[in-house]
Image 1 (cartoon, rainbow, N blue to C red):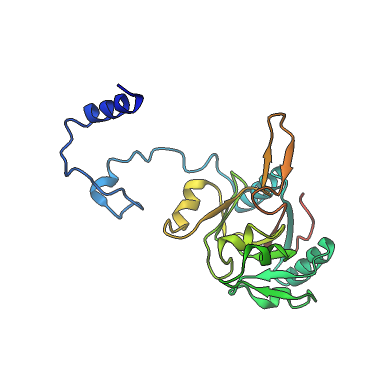
Image 2: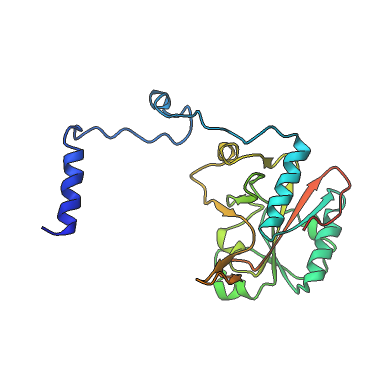
Length: 233
């Protein structure tokens, strides 16, 4: 008997009392299949501790910086100037913009804006210095930015190939405390990209290398109505 035969035999014995047509659908969201919701244990903590809105945003900034993202704060009016400054400091000669990104954000950038096109090749995207996007939701407890391919975020590869990603997060509307709260806002049928800091990996000696599977540099701009332009990183 091979290992494969042994494993399949155990599976068959475990399923011996299960009817052949007993294949209930997996609930995609609470309430989608009420007959199965009661069987799911939802007693887990939805967030760890109780925080005010300001404390939640501060936690997001702290955890983003801990993952080596560069975090900036500004108001809506300061956003175009902030983006222009970040692109200039980076020395960017071009920036890729998703189709739904407000062009007013980059009105003063003074550099070519590359449109997100379906026919763009990875080689063409690699020639772009920076990409600027919005986000779907930001999770404070994990320092995670989630993109879902909406018009202000573009296709997944436009945020994976260029070496520099600037992501704009609206505060507090797009900020939640925990992963469960974030999942409630996301559509599982959309192409979700979860980002916790710049792309990085480590070898067996724990030597960190950034820019392996995505951007080497991630900058997050927290945009609110409060005049906070300091860098948190």
